[in-house]
Amino acid sequence: MRFGRWDTFEELGRGGQGIVYLALDTQKVDVEGKILPTIRRTVQELGQIRSFEDTQKSGLQFLQAIEKYLARRNPENCGALKVLHDEVRNTPRARARFEREVSALSSRDHLHIVKLLESDVPSGWFVTEYFPLGSLEKHTDLFRGRALEALLALRPLVAGVATLHAEGISHR
Image (cartoon, rainbow, N blue to C red; front, side, top):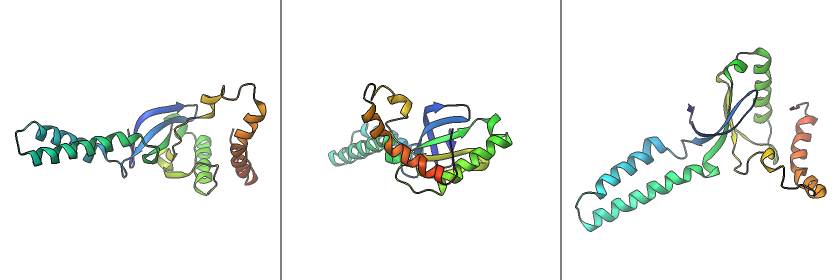
């Protein structure tokens, strides 16, 4: 699915409010418009009998296009795109909560609060930075039995949440 310049290609999670996808920034990596056509063209060119120089040039173009295709999973080229469920987007209370969430993200510049990259509030979606290690839920066993280490590891998260709470913003 396409949302503005963002092309989703993997579901990261879902909840009561919406679905979060891994999304590719097509301004950084244009798979459909530039990369795949280059791959198709160079594969056809490589099958033709031509000079060594031409074959070498086509081969290099092919390898560069493959490298760009693989780079689409680079976190620098991706974002976490949250899309509200239709029934949520049409509920005034949930819509207001979503607007507050976007507002909170767009007005904060804190090391431990994810940055908002783009949003379309009327359409019910926004994109934040993507962190490939996933959610806290995926790491619940990491510090089992090591409470002090767990508390130290969670300190940055607590600092980010405390900043939001000090400004009157809370999240369930």
